Length: 463
Ligand code: SAM
Image 1 (cartoon, rainbow, N blue to C red):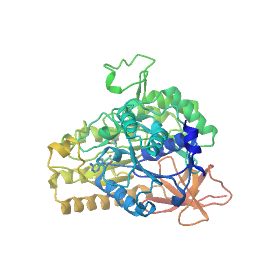
Image 2: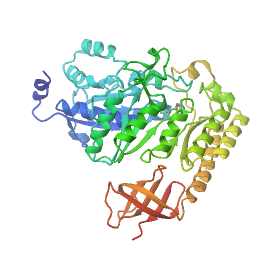
Image 3: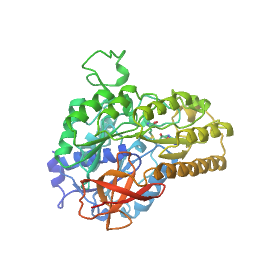
Image 4: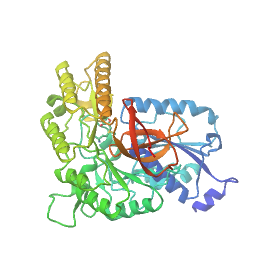
């Protein structure tokens, strides 16, 4: 049936895909490419050649939504009135929001990617009824664990989603509504996939989850279905056990993970990171705010004090570990003293780097429905600038510590600024740029650090 459908076109059926937002979306795009190529569709990076144009979207902030709308406006010229091809498909988190462009032929959410070939076929046949019934039968337990991601370009590093959805219900966050409840992939399929990736030439994998530390395998299904966790049950695999297993099974593969929620990061995970040289010494630990009042309003389930003692524990067990953050500024009811608490927390931690956002109310979330977005835009902007400026000072402070040291760097590709230089990252996830000499992409080299900016280390390979 599928073959017949594609054979009705004289030329091969080409699709073009763009990815927006987080690492998980990039990883999902690789899964979508895998599904479509197995079904006979051909990837093109030439928009004008494409029979289908797919945008894999993000809904985390209004700005992300706006950029998709702008992109659709830019692409409108490709489809003149009453023309069927190219089909426009919206994938990912925005697919759940109201229809916002008459250009779109179909929308598919993050749990229904296996059905994309069927839906394209039904759209071509104008079978609205069947499309609706497919979309209504969304698989809430979907983990895509049997599908190997296919990147569109050859790379040395890759992402692998090990948990999907989120149960944390942070009051600002749209993720539980767009991606569903939390579930984990089987450890056996994760190990097998990582071994496959290593055999294919990948040197580094980043394990992904909205809240990766809360990974839990108890045989499958949604995490909320497990009533009580029996820590002595050998069959139950938590994140520390998974990391330990993976690091031992593929000792020459670098392993990273993201994102950790401070509430879920256990001592066991910190110990496993310190035990294995192939688990990278970097933890992305979003704090969101330094004020207990705001953390409570955000439903983050930890306090400033608990967060700071977690940082202390990490630093005492893994002194060389770098720490990065996410912070939201201008959340509902944030007063000047709350903002100053965030600044004082940043001064205590002196993060290596971080991602900072001004609060963007998302329809459907608790904060949108129950709290007032009452910090004026100009104050949000000013506070955001203050924390970005402060982070720059801390980043430079951290980067200067590397001057004169030798860093072990995995070479990932050509530097964007100079063709004669490579770029790669050290275990702390800091970008290092240096002249190529005789080294090759995929090699691990030792680089002497001679200079730095707030985001990049500059070095050389000594003979
Ligand atoms: N699940 C992770 C966590 O909550 O720790 C991070 C996931 S989210 C894709 C990445 C970041 O976007 C969050 O850590 C938060 O700082 C930011 N973010 C999420 N919702 C936001 C909102 N409504 N407004 C502004 N920033 C937001």
